[in-house]
Length: 325
Image 1 (cartoon, rainbow, N blue to C red):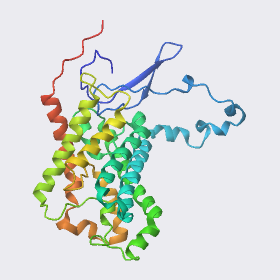
Image 2 (tube, one colour):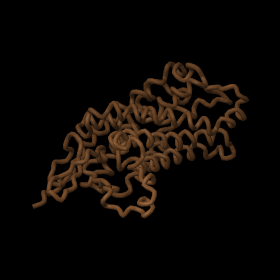
Image 3 (cartoon, helix red, strand yellow):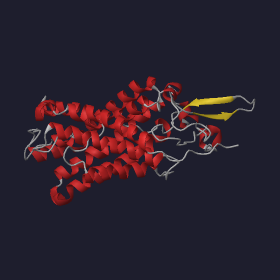
Image 4 (cartoon, rainbow, N blue to C red):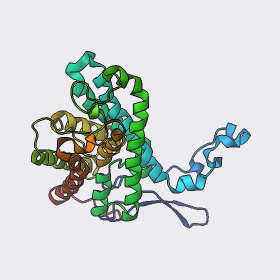
């Protein structure tokens, strides 16, 4: 999107490269649509000098692998799937680690918030240049609601995010299976001294009522979207070339400062995908525990995400960029 275009233009953006015949070839490629006017270049095969080995062994070239056209057509959704997979693998992985390794119990929560922040940054590096790096159904929905993302892609993005989270949880269980047995003797318990339910999804802290848990999830998700828009707005002080790290630090800050009471889900896929997997271990308890608490992290981030974007666009009014002659 050029600087001559109005800020916050609806729908999705396209990058064009000129062919020798002068016609523009458009590649449907959503940029970081949640970040106003953020530009991401689309790599083209012609831009790279291919290794000589490809001429000798063409099958080393991924474009020669099966179903290339199909893979390329759905690359956005694959990127969301694997980005969410990496996020949950690292995030739930650090919770599992501090649960089973109690040698540094005093710093366990700090390790969790740091692990989630770094995990998010790594996940965004994997997918942001392809899908925009939503990794969160609330982000996808809110951006579509405010005209930053195409509605037709919303169902596919959400499905990819939930599936990525579920598969990551299953993979993580394989990694830590023997440690689960060592910890609880093979008797899986959701809560209690030998409880492991908190590895997979969020539950409000004891004594935290529904109302203030709802309030916490709305506010924390609103802050997430508000600050993401701020650090990605070229008219302010954008974190150009370092967006994944900046967003990872943002989630680290939310977790460390205001997320403790509910576990700061702020992402329905991050909570619901592993929660569904955990029913294999604990039966229906992950959905019935806490007076059916599961609906709070499943629904409230949608409200918070929309609120965060609204507040940003209503109150933060930087000077518009001058048009280029």
